[in-house]
Image (cartoon, rainbow, N blue to C red; front, side, top):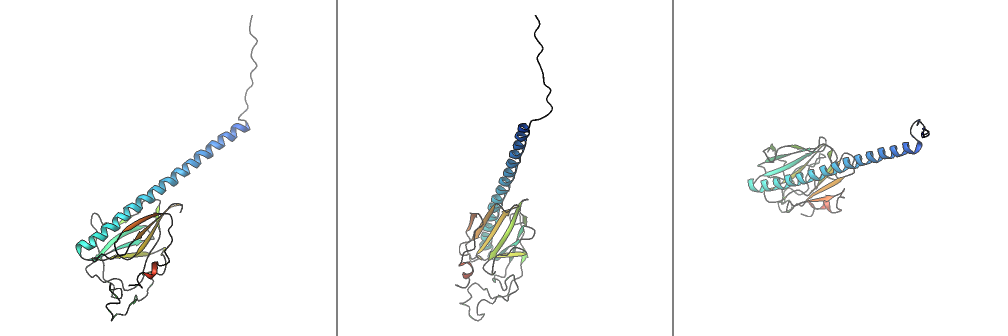
Length: 216
């Protein structure tokens, strides 16, 4: 006895449900890829923050050991930074906006203990193996930077942070971000100790930040 032949139906294509399942899988995979990219950029931002924090502490120490003034130059346009130095230990005569920098009475030494009103020194390249110019990794950018000789955070051009052999450094803040401006890290530098602190997120400038120099 022969079995009856089974009826077969040739499928014309994917059903609507199958198409939706495929689309959902593609969307999920794309979402995971974006999350992985964001996580990678966030890791780069944290890594660059740690590297820059180490560079700042190193410059602080070199200034004390060599007994001369150093400065960290941050280029916000090409996301790089370099180190310069000078045997002239004067502070800074002018802010980056072209002011004359005369914050104190030039004839009153006690009113200007750090030489803020003195002429700006000539800075030389202080490149060495551990102080060579560096560029941030791909996907990491300087958002802005500020010191107490600025009126507000700077987003373009160059910002300089001065280090002195007496252990004083300009109070400063540096913001790093990823390419999508979703991951932020903020560096803060204490003027009296040179201590560098890292903060997750886009830290705001304290209300008393610009009053530091005036109080001295």
